[in-house]
Image (tube, rainbow over all chains, first blue to last red; front, side):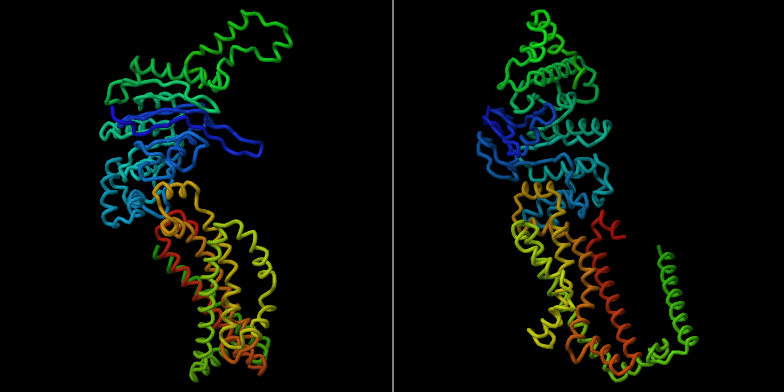
Length: 301
Length: 259
């Protein structure tokens, strides 16, 4: 196998807060191969967006390194296509002009840029909306424009930061299916952050499950479901089993906290209870573990 | 669309007719002599005389020149400084006390000083004008540049846009609506600036005409001067508003706000 498109190696990240340093990422490593669709899922506030911003080169890590096609990332580059949580379209440009923006910034002729943008806009299913301004686009349409804009450079990797986060459930499902179709057509290399377990499984070749802050990798779940994937997949037992597995891993990660920091958190009885009751019987602990560890999938998410 | 436009003109026409009618009526009922309150007819008559000897155009030209030069100077300096202050908070902290101080002193009080320093000629009027225009445009530039969303800045960074390209593709269009509303305020204020300058010391311009009218008890002349200033301010405001409409035709959000 050739070198991975993206290598994240022993990444540490912390933010300075008035109260002190807030550790966000701790020793996070993973890779994304050419043409692979990897989704990242984790408890909210666990630094998923930070991770993407680091990979994009918008911020610098405390330590560790990020390699893009073998080259270390020091600053933002066109090699990375980024779709933010919000579409981030320029309100004074039409859909078409927004897609063409990256090329125009590069100094491409306007005509050429618009021509390429037109093709991409058609590809994401927005033919006929070329001259619409962002305020006249629905949330889902605006996100499609943002996707087309991120792709116009033919980036090495596409980073999606909860691109469907601000959309309603129905649009969200449609767009996820659409994204699967687009990916299958072009075999892009994608790293996508999401909050939805089923979305993560539906789209991915591999799901990365993250722990709460300080975040590290809790588990990697390979998804070897057949492609092309469509809505029928949602009812297949294999899919449901995978969703359950990811959810369990996520729950486990959420309960146990950061693995590297406190590997056996839920084996320790809470201090106050120990003081009140004196000694806690093994039986209580055992039952505690069962209820907390093996939560039925879907109960807490 | 068309009918609303016509009806708007109709409403303005009727209200103006009513205004002049009322004015004529007050003069007629009160029996005021022209040097207290001239009737609209007498003002128009005076206007005719001034137009005939060409002096009105001369004075008006001088004032318009002062206004345009002052407006241009004030706008250029204010936008450049505003851009700087928006990007460098240290500069803002350093300069804002002086900028605010310069605004807390009435222009009328500073104008004599400027005349002493820069002479009674055109330059001192241009400077007074620029001073008046400066502040609203400065503040609006800062607000405009700062209103650019951080995500859009990130986007420009992802596109490897340098400072100049970020300025051209993002900051200028993003700040334009706010900047233009600052310019609208500045345009009307610039008329005041020029007249204040002319009041202090001058031998030409609409301000000079008004002052002369006052000294000679030629009240119709004062009214002509005031009328011309109003027309000038309206024309300036209208020009900026038109430019705004043209420049912001793509700003789908902002056109709604601007109307």
